[in-house]
Structure formats: C-alpha cells, structure tokens
Image (cartoon, rainbow, N blue to C red; front, side, top):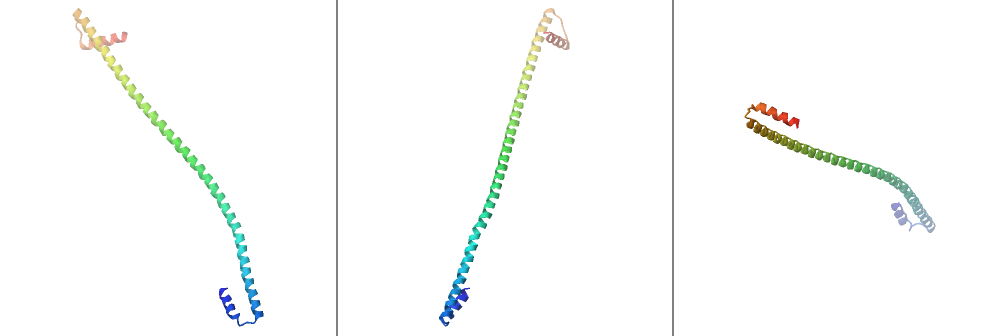
Length: 151
C-alpha cells in the first residue's frame, strides 16, 4: 500500500486535476476502509478476549476453589495425623510410666516379703534356741512359710 501511494504521489503531479481528484478519493476510500476494518476488528476483539478471559477466570476460580478444598482436606488430614501421633506418644509414655510403677511396686513387695521372712526366721530361731531344739535349714524355711501363710 505504501509503495502504491508513493508511486501515485509521484505520478500525481503529471496527471490532470480530475484524475488527481479521483486518485485522492480512491486513497481516502482505501484509508477509510482500512480504518473501518481495523475499528471493526478492534471492536470485536475485546468481546472475544473478554469472553475468553471471563471463561478462563471462571475456570481459574473453580480450580482455586477446588485447590482450596484440597488444601483444607490436606490440612485436616495432617492435623488428624498429628493428633493421632500425639495420642500414641502419650499412651506410650503412660504405658512406660505404668510399667515402671508396677516394677517399683513389685520390688517393694518382694523386699517386704523378704523382711517378713527374715523377721519370722529370727523369731523361730529364738524360740528354738530357748527350747534347745534344732532344725535343718530347709525345715526352718518350711516353718517360716507356714507361719507367714497362716497370718
């Protein structure tokens, strides 16, 4: 188009005025038709772009909502897992404390039983020495067990 305009412009000085007028009108029509075409395209473009942008925004919004739901679900799942691990850790520590307490109680009970047996053995030895009777160590042990079971 620009080459034709220059060509026409150079030649237009040699042409008669009527032809120059017709050439000028033709150029104006070409320019106005180009402007009209450009304006129509630009007028159509925003609506098409607007529609596609709106559509992508709605898809984007839907994806954002789904992503938010998935994030919330993931966060809730992680919270449940964290609470579960805390609960298991607490149960394990409670179980450990209970086992330690039971071990301590069993140790104290066995020490108490040993002290009772020692006291009963001393008491029986004193009685046997006062009566000048003698027993074997196994017999003495059997008497201590019998005495403690009857109390």
